[in-house]
Image 1 (cartoon, one colour):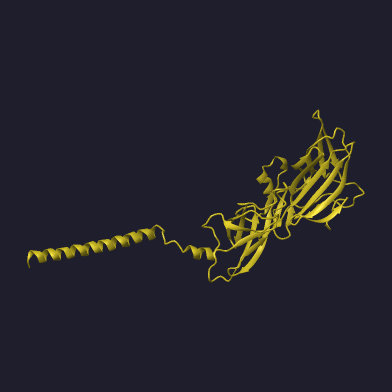
Image 2 (cartoon, one colour):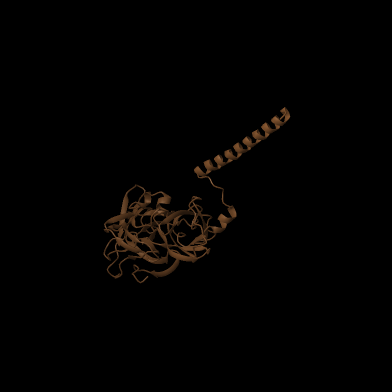
Length: 335
């Protein structure tokens, strides 16, 4: 065998070794990738098509009572639950109208509900505000005037009961208020010096601010003791018209007919304060009865002597703002 033949054979061997090394390196790299949990990215079209589509409606529009903010807003966060799995979803856009329907997106891409071919139907429920567990033990603030806006709004617990949908059908969740909302507008134009309202309290050691909630389309409550007073939050004031509006959110409950409902404090130019109490009069046989999902609007006029006169009480369905009653007495359980 001459030198040229020997060189050719040697070159062929070197190429075989190099080829084997390249293949081995490729296999080693593949094994390393598998060990690291790296896998090819799924086709994005397939993932998008298989994601469960969620929309929401109802619920929060009248909680944000500052007239221009009666909408779901971008990034309002809520829990969507299926079985033992709870994922956080966020509003994808702002409501186009008060109480309008909006779509949702997962807060974390990895925590997305997807359809799988072997599943023919799914059942979901949801609650707001976001929490990894469904609301059960609930407490509202006794000084709601001092609460940050989001903390105040988040007392408004919403719940969407079980909804079962067929394969790849959109999930449209309808929320129900589990709390009730009390609003009072006081007119002080008849008072001496037309003194401004500087504080309104609901009750006088006779309000329940906590309890155990069984959420649903009709909220079930077991209240703790009714021994608190709630300092209400100022919603608005019109000093030229001498109108002052306050509000608070509380668990649904009934009060005794003889109990103090409001304590209204006014302050004169010398910083002297006067507190006028409203206690339902004996001629009113109906005790205050505050029902979940309802809003109670009281219109009150203070007389020159400081007497409290109830001019109207309007009872709303909180979600639709539909007036279900208007009366000069305190609403009873029939409303």
